[in-house]
Length: 315
Image 1 (cartoon, rainbow, N blue to C red):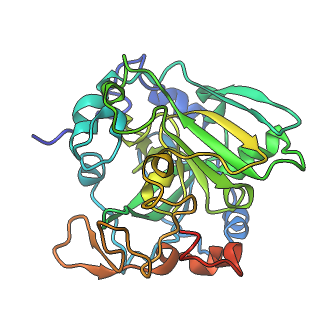
Image 2: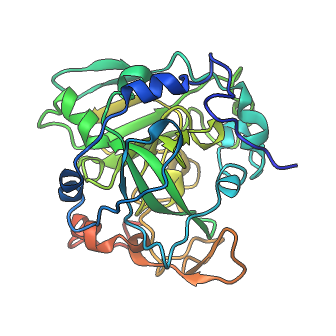
């Protein structure tokens, strides 16, 4: 049975912000400013964006001819979110227990102005819709229109010090809300990390919505990371803590299976996972496989971050 995520007007008041509140807080970014933030990436007008984020600027770094958007039903019913189970349908079936209000993110570490910020204040950031490719290390992929804002805009507010070299992230760790935490599949809580320059890159975003609607629980509500040139597991969901640190932070999959999951986890068709070839991928909804692009097709924007690095050794 397919799970249908309710719209903001259908969901319970204690789970999502009412549509009217989103609409009253929405902000419009000038198209030119958004284009400058993403370098040469185009800003597309005439978006069909609907729901609570109608005023968000739409930016499409994915080629709409080569990369048709994955149907929302597929993107919300075929997920990896082990806190709610290891099966692809488990998150959609089990994530109704997640309470996304109230919600806060604690930000600290090597910063001048540590803070704890609530989701309602995060929703005041100017919103953009960005259509990104999503590539899973398991060999499947999607194209998803996310709604959110650059992570850099949040990190600038806490004023990283000269000692900050990396950014560590942590997911909510509550077994009452997340039944998958009762398993030993990973060392909980789920953690991830980026180098500071990766975190500050204009393509890196915090998403609070998708397909113009409030982010569904199974997709990482109420706020998740999206790093489109890395494998999907790097885009940590349901974030409650961000720490700027001196040393490379431990990450969940790297701790669990270090020979299979590196810290960087950039999409690389030339470096296979022990269990899955990375040379090709199956776009969800398609029967044939397609060639995987280096950096998931975002090499022009991000390859310079890794100049001089051996990307096979630093997988």
